[in-house]
Amino acid sequence: MPLDAPSSVELKPLDFITAFHEVRPLNPAYVERLRQKVRAIGVKPYPLSVTPAGVLFGGRHRFEAFRAEGITECLMHVSEPASLDREAIELNRASEDALPMSFVDYAEMVWRKLAAGATQQAIADEFGWSRSAIADYAALRRISAEAWNVVATSQANALSRSDDDATASVAAATFTENLLRSIVPLSGIQQLELVQDLAAGRINKNKFRAQADAYRTRNAIKGWVRDSLGGIDPEIMGEAMAEVMRGAYDAEWIAFAEKGVEPAKLIRLIDAARDRFAKKHSLILIQGDFHQEVQKLGDASVDAIITDPPYRISSDRIYRLASQADWNKNFGEWDNQPEGEFLADIRRWADTFFRVMKPGASGFMFVGEPYLNIAQAAFDAAGFEIKGSFFWCRSNPGTSVTKADFMPAMDFAIQFTKPGARRTFNYPGEPEGFNWHRAPICGGHERLKTPKGETLHPTQKPEAVIRHLMDLITLPGDLVFDGFMGTGTTGKVARDTGRKFIGIEQDVTFFTAAKARVEG
Image (cartoon, rainbow, N blue to C red; front, side, top):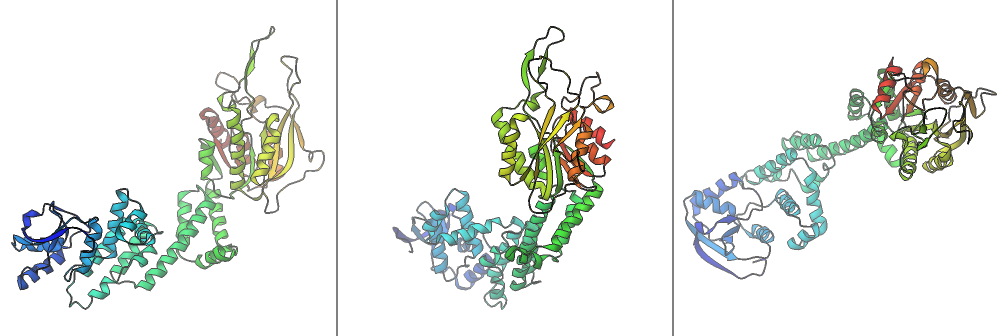
């Protein structure tokens, strides 16, 4: 016996066997071959291998052949090996009439042990194999169930052919563990197509490997294109993916991946998809959480950002005044975030904006005065060039309620640019070229109201200010992004000036008002 264990060979009834330790599925064709041998030469003296408790772990196909032929007893080698799997493998190798275990059997045995909680190293120690051999078998688990079934069936059919079948050795060698590892990274559909073609003889191993390499290359291209385009229209994305799968970009991608050569044709493909998307969806308004929805935007996909996120300047302090109703500065939960979370969000905004902006793209982000320098530092850390600050000077800030402080007449914004290409800056001359712009706060028909006539949004920016900024850093046809759309001022200005626009707003009431304003 390959493993040291007390053992004996005894003539026992087949009924002594009460359970089976399975290391591979039964092959009915091979059972039939053994039945023919039994009829020709009788029960061979090579014993079945069982444990003292009656668990069969060696000779399952012979057992089924004996039982099918009406044989009621045979020699059994009774022992209690330390590892039933390892012992079964050794017995299979030693048996002169055994159906050879294939890599399919070994792989499935490894998978069962991993599923039961064993580590790869523990399995290697038990079988006496190398850790890398176990890892190779474990990797095959990533092949789809449909494709693996084709492989397993093909191997079983090949190995069960009669010895005088001239095609048996060729068919048995069709699939190998090493060959199949080449399709592990592929999609299930691609895996199934390749194994079906090889099993049917439509392709040979060389073509199999070449096609697997091509699929891996095209899948990498698809991932890059998908990241570049983001959550674009599914139809347009599908057309781009189909174009990639034609194979026209393979050589260019390899040169890009290996040598850093610019993939000019792929860039044209992405630009064409974006142009189609822009024509089909020039105004995109999204209701939802900024951090979730912005992930759907492609890398380097927007030409400019003009946005007015929360300032965290709300206050629950109540001013009790003799001449008018009590007054406070609580704008709502959206502007009343704990400071630690707010500072973390500023850093997340910076990183996200850097990802979605094209090289050379510029942006303005309004920010409360206490966080002006903090925001500039965060955007600098994200990789932006900080161009300075911009100030909206309110020409009609109103009067001080308490008469105890200055009446704030300035709104602050940071100006930032993503390096890597020439930026757009349409210098308007003096005094419009100064880093401030004077305009009144919203009023009249521009100020949105609730059905009760109350102010809908407490910090609605005037169109004149946003128009000034948009004229500075964009051109007609550019895509402008506002991740905190509010009531849609940036979107309306973009529409009115021939720019494309994507806006995100979480508040349902504000979003509804923005949608009516921008699309109307």
